[in-house]
Every structure is written in C-alpha cells, then in structure tokens.
Image (cartoon, rainbow, N blue to C red; front, side, top):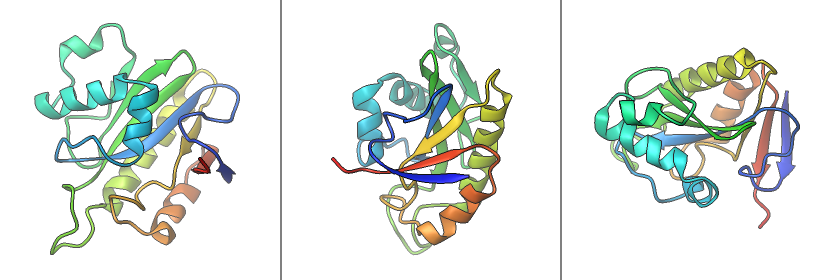
Amino acid sequence: MIRYLKGDATSPQAKGPKIVAHICNTAGGWGKGFVLAVSKRWPEPERCYRAWYHARTIPTTLREGFLILSSGDFGLGQVLLVQVLPDTFVLNMIAQQGLKTGSKGPPIRYDALAACLRTGDQLAKDMNVPATLHMPRIGTGLAGGRWEHIEPLLAKLRSDVYIYDYNG
C-alpha cells in the first residue's frame, strides 16, 4: 500500500523498523538533491556509498561497526543498506546512469530501479519485524524520471510505502 504524506522522508512517520530509500548514480556523485538531506541527518550512507563506489565492492573497513548489506558489487540495480539508528536504515539504490540527461535520455534506469525496489522490499520483509519503506518521489528530480512510470513499480511491493512531499 502506498501512502502519501507531507513532510520530510528523513524523519519517517511510522512505528517499528524503517527503511529510507533513495536513488544513487553510477558516477560516484553525491551532493545534490535528496542526498543532501540524508547526509545532513546521517553521515554514514554517504561515506558507505563513496567507499562502495571506489572499491566496487564492500570494503572490509565498512563491515566493522555498521550493519551493512549489499546486493552485490557496485553497479546498476544494486543496493547498499546502511543502519543509521537502531530502527532506521538508509537504502542506497543504484538506479541512475551517470549524472545528466544525454542522447540516451534521462539518467534514470527504470529496470535498475525495479530491481533495487524488489531487493529493498525483500530486505524489509526479512527483518524480525517487517520494515516500512519511506522516500520522496524518487527518480523525478535529478534522475529525470516520470512519476507515472515509478509509482507502478512501488505498487507491486509487498511492504507499506510512504511517499513524502516536502513542505519545508
């Protein structure tokens, strides 16, 4: 079930375990869009994404002191789940090819996003108490995607999904 809320996706409005999901790119860029709010609240997801990008796999140094789960080596369709609070996780989803719109259209890759969302949904269901998924209207900003293509991907998930429209 998808629920639309006014508010900030980095302050999830639900009880129990929560996963804040967002789209990352394949270029190693982190500094515009929703990731600024993520980094302002929690530094770990950016640090882990950058290390994952440079190493192309999860470096051993990141495995100590964090709960970090990866669906595989760095690339489209892969995710990195980083625990930021006892009941809150950030899901870095690689679903944007590069940084800019070019001759191949917008950088969003819907097939990669669908794979990331399926993995995130499974991770949410595999927790002791199933987690809820929280996000802004992912893919519609810097990634150049269209919500009418993204919303149906979210509707297929088994987890409860909360979409935040920022009102700040």
